[in-house]
Image 1 (tube, rainbow, N blue to C red):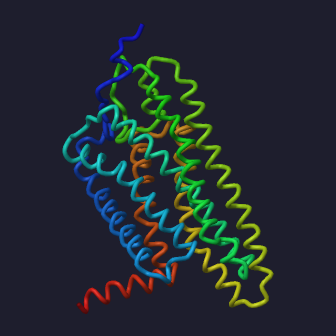
Image 2: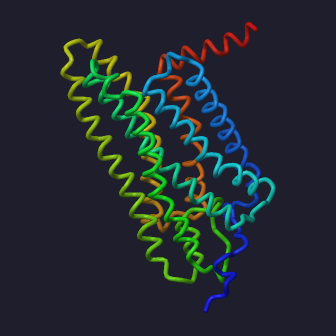
Length: 313
């Protein structure tokens, strides 16, 4: 029988980026800059959406949720990465590791659902402009938000319990810079087939269904746009979708590449996969507010106004 302490290990060791130990200090610098950009950019975005009445619309409410989730995602991973690279703080308690697993995967599933909700917003705005405020009424938005959070919570929470049931009597060194479900489960000497099945299949299928519905939404959107008689109206309609499409590509493309690389890229060096995984959780949260700031005129105007007022005071 397994020792009771195997089911409640005190801590794990995050190995960092194997093979690049002498470059850890230099690798940490760009990640620190990216994290600061993510915090400042998303924080500014949240501030603008809260204080500006003209931004109290469904699209900006979903953007508010996206910025909040991006802050959770980057804060759950990057600070620990920097303490590992710069301070050599490799130890993480079992509780902190499970917390990191939950928020890492929870943020990913929530982000995907928010992108689907934003696709729905664009679909209604372009295909049914006269019914926009009726279809996406405040009570509908609240139901969507509750549905997104509850679905994501129910999908990811079993990951935590699937890890807690495992014994960890052998090595406790995680060859990564953060805790993720399968990486932690592989340290156990017990059968982890259910962890692999659930940890991979259920979240991926959940996100895959979001991708399918987003694609269907854009089929209807493009059909509606190309039926518009005016060239100017077509350009304006497509322009309103530009920032959303950019964020979708930044979110799903690296995710698909990362999944395929881990599944089939056995010849790819381990440190390359770890670096890419860290870039994936760090870069999109930093770029999303920039994309929306550049592509969305309302946010751009409020951003310029905010800093112009600060300079004149």
